[in-house]
Length: 265
Image 1 (cartoon, rainbow, N blue to C red):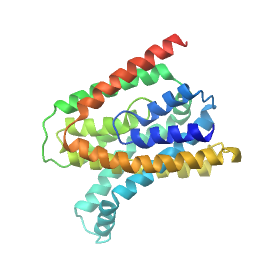
Image 2 (image 1 turned 90 degrees about the vertical axis):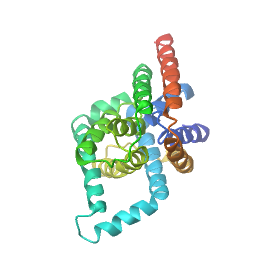
Image 3 (image 1 turned 180 degrees about the vertical axis):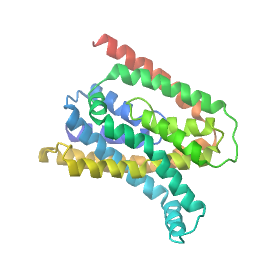
Image 4 (image 1 turned 90 degrees about the horizontal axis):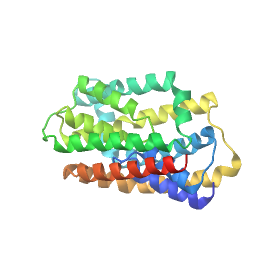
């Protein structure tokens, strides 16, 4: 993978991690268009690096919220901050289970499965359409809701299902406030990403080639910068209830991906 490809894929990841259009799906489409023939393990390494970059951008954007949570936890009381952290932990359970028992199967899906990406983008489109029709409320995310949202996050491990789109849509359809749903969605993935990276490093699952260092670091930087922009932009879009536009985009790209896959099969 050359630097130009890394920049393009980094921008795709940074933008689509927060916009509800599936970062993993767009990365697979980008790799197919750019002719990236990496084996699944190498492709997964680049994907993990880019997700790590966007996790850092999430921390930067929500640094005040995270600091407030830490301060609240240090009070050692049953307060809103402790409850929020426990909800985050609860939401992680489905994804952790899927990651532990179906990791190898998931890795194989990140090797140019364009037909799957196209179909899953259409599913994402439907979720966004339904969420956009839901009425806004002032409700917080409850513990039961947190687990259900976590199930959506686990399903979104499939390339083409938008993680932010699935979790925000699920939360909104459960009757939660849209802004609180977005905040919960963005923060709930951070510990999962860091946990996955730590696990892969310790287990040796990631295949690293020093010749790819420049491409990996370039992709990381571009994904981080694009992520800062996209995260801030997405918060503004959620406030304005503009999910229907992304629904239209996903269904169009989904059908294009399906046609592309069938023509090249």
